[in-house]
Image 1: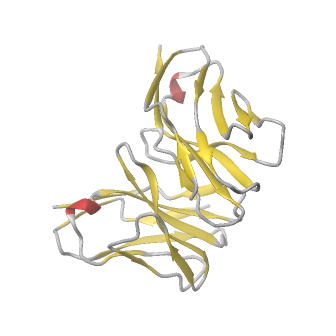
Image 2: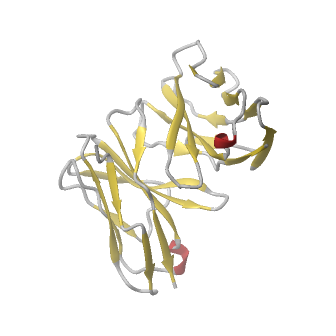
Length: 114
Length: 112
C-alpha cells in the first residue's frame, strides 16, 4: 500500500520569511510522481508543484521549490518570501506508475502573519 | 474553458435518502476520481475510473456507487445516505497519470 504522511497539522510563518512544509511517503515502486496542492478558503484545489521521481533535479516554480530526497522518501515544500495569499491548506500527494490512485496526505494548514 | 464541473455545490439530505453528485469534464481526460474531505483526514479516494466503462474502488467505497458510461461524465451515487457521509466531496480528472489533477469546486453534503 502507498501512504503519504504530513506530520505537522499546522504551521505559521511571518510575511516575507521562508517556511518548509514536510511530507514523507512510502512505496515500493521506483516510478512515481509527487505533487503539492494548495487549498485556499475558497475550497478550490490548485496545483503548486510536481516532481517526477526519476528526475534528480528538484522542481522549482517561482517562490515554491521542493527538496526531494528519494532515498529518504521525503518531499518537502519550501515557500520563499511568504505572502498573505499563501495562507491555505497544503496537501502532499503522489501516485505510482503501477496504479491509477492519487493518494493524498492529511494536509497542513499554513497561516501567514502580517 | 469549463474544466471540471461538479454539481450541486451544497446539499442537505435526510438519513436514508439517495442522491447523485454530478461530475463532468470537457478536457477529454481518461482518468477521473471521487474524493471525500473530512477534517484531519485529508482527501480520501472513494472510487476512480481509468476510462469509459472501467471503474474501481478506492480507500472508502462503502455506501457509494459510480459508473462511467462516457469519457466526460463520472457521477457518484449515494444509495442510502448516512450521517457518516457528511463531508465535502471532490471530483477530479487527469489527462495522464503524471500530469496535473483538475478538481471540481466541491460539494458540501450534510446528512441529518
